[in-house]
Image (cartoon, rainbow, N blue to C red; front, side, top):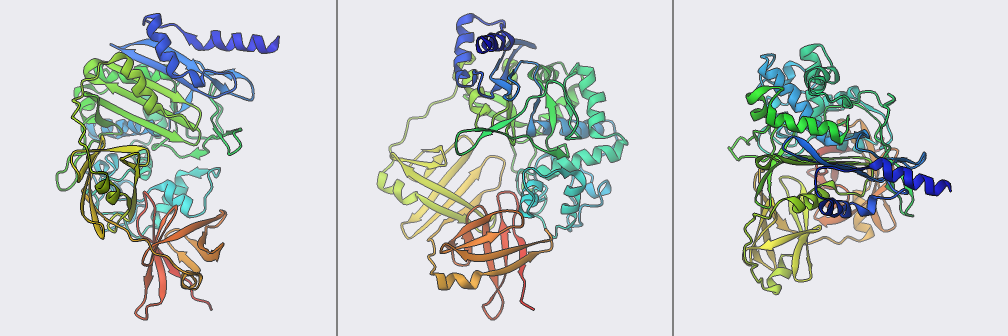
Length: 536
């Protein structure tokens, strides 16, 4: 009897009829059917048209322990969607004359090291600062996912850095640190924390009563969702971020409140024309290459329609807010489970409402022998990055993304063009991604090393930028890295003196050809130096 009652309670609580026909609402619900259960987390959805919510619905559970269902008023941590609100604060302050977006950030945050080049707020907003990412640095220093991380922790880590990933403005590389710094700058410029500034300037005037920057992880927030992931055995586990830092993340809100924020991009009630224009104006690199990243917003295209969007993901929370400005149409999805893909789900919802206007080019029939030759692993020395190209079912893929051929040498995705050249013994790849500099990759001929050859890479290595020592040793016939407070990480020989795994390690040698250190790179950290610790 209790189970039947619970099911009825969930169904009545989460279903909200909107202003679309029943047949269309059923098609929308079918997209989310796998989450519409009483034993699974799920998501809240709002579909917006001409300033109104035409359909809102919730699927799944807000809290599995107490059997509480998600509703359209449930509050979610929305991760990197937060960035547009942080950017909005600094843009708004610039229009008030409190700062210039071209100011050197050290004017307000002297803890940032003097790298020899000015870093501006424009660099931070558009991810062109070259600053290393806070999450990668913390993880490399041995911090765990469940550790409490504060603004002070991030500033102290940043203050130890000796170099940048690249010169400011030379490249685009997504960087959470930049948005944490913007949040800190807002407080130092105004004397009011970002949370209070955003509340007074944006949230209260727009009636976003269930929205705030969450600056204290222990603060109680009524109606907040819990978040989850599935372990290797298929069991749900709690996955909630423990952050006392915000700006890059940590906005708490609902789909209904985000609808009000979205509508301000049309009404311009807060900020006016100039503010809205600046929020959606993309940046450019030093060489004038245009970006597709604006102020915490990605300006892009979907099936022939202009889109302005951003997604987010922290621990078990996932989110997406996409706007089709010319159609005055938007979709908001906020979720509390790690294995959901709100971007894909948003696209499926959009497909029900918008006719495909994209131009379908005829598919070029590529020579399969040539295709196989392009498959393999490629390395770019400048960005210290590896791309793996797979050949499956007569198709080239990067991960799950299909490379669509223009001819035997040129392939495209929605954002990038891959141009291959060379023969089977020497293959090069030019990667041209919208908003980024062109990268040159070379197909790797992977190295194989014996146990005796691996031994010279063993030892203790120390980074003063992390204030952390790594131990490299041979285990199970492979080289492994022990990061403090973490399990060993296996790295495999890639090319001469370079190993790859969850990170890229490039060893250095002294004049006697003896290993004296290494440079470590991850996706958002490049060339972090570790010096070999010599035995006393």
